[in-house]
Amino acid sequence: MIKTEDFHFQANAGTAGFLIGVIAMMIMVIHLWAGPFAPQQSAGVAIGELAAEIRLSATKALRGIGNPPPEVPERDIDQLLIAGATILAGLAVVLGLIGLIRREPGRPALFAVGLGVSAILFQLFVFTILLFAGVFLIIGVLQNMDGILGG
Image 1 (cartoon, rainbow, N blue to C red):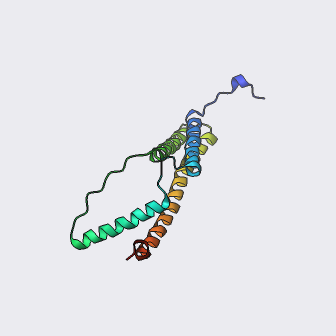
Image 2 (tube, rainbow, N blue to C red):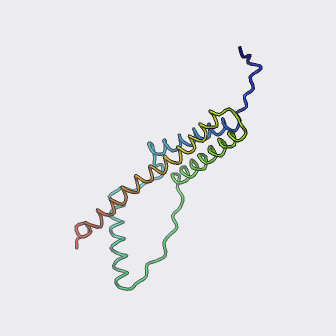
Image 3 (cartoon, rainbow, N blue to C red):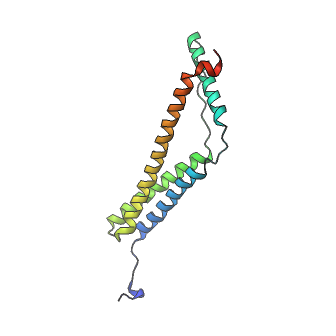
């Protein structure tokens, strides 16, 4: 029988990585389900502005007028949350690998690596799905440009 005073917990890096990986995954999932947290304009306004901007840019290009330089967008809370969660996920992977290298008990270290990689892949999966949806939306706007702007 193992006495509690003889048990020494050695999984420092692995456990820290596991906890950080859990936090990263929770941020990713909460942001997907409850976000976006920054104020957003409606989809109709965004699509209308996109169509008008495409038409204005095409008109300027045909007339030989240059477009103004692009504006640098400000960072909002959503971008900061995603960047922070990605950094935490990377840190979880690194701590899990450190735990494996130091030969700490395997489960916390493996879970840290798994959660970190899962959080990063989760973000890439969601981004890919949204990218395809955005491409299909832009294709639909371009195909219906005459109907949207009248002419």
